[in-house]
Length: 249
Image (tube, rainbow, N blue to C red; front, side):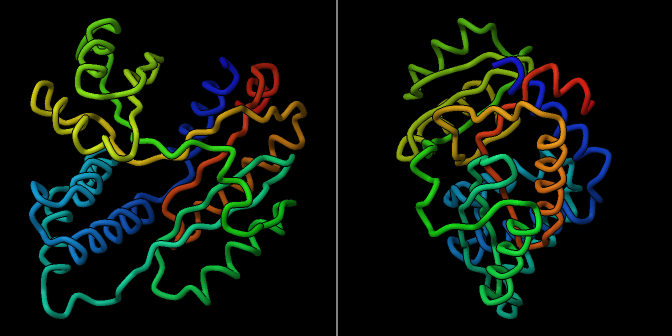
């Protein structure tokens, strides 16, 4: 799936060029807030907070910002309460899309997400309308210089992971949702924190976008979704072949 890999790289470059750092930080701070409110400020006993802190480090968020967010969420007057919501549907070209949000007002977020789907040439469906095309998994990524592919494969499986894929982005480790905390803690104890660690929706089969116009529409759609403050994560099964991805580059 070389095209899929290159597509991810294109999206990464676009993110680095187009996103304002403040918007990325706002989303992570909201994630920290929810984690602390749910299970307290101690990451050793709060798995959700540990994931949020990994995301903060991956995005190079200053330590002071993180500490202030934890302190604020721990206070009696911790501001708005956020709820986790999920929206599903089809984007341009029939790509299956899952959108995860943190919102303090569902009556605002749902219409906004629906509008982005419609404006982008897709449509938002009911919960579960595309989730069956994805596997819900735990995901960890270690840098390539940490271990060889064979060493990481053996270490991850010993920790309870289901699979390891070594790509240009690093050693990508997959496990069940139930085993995520165990696998993460076991590997962290041996090799320190991963570069990334979270629960993901992994597509079972790629959906090819084979023409340039549709690919451009899809990237514009993803950009619009990412610009929404309530949107935390977007998962999709798009696969853009190399010949199209090179024209987008």
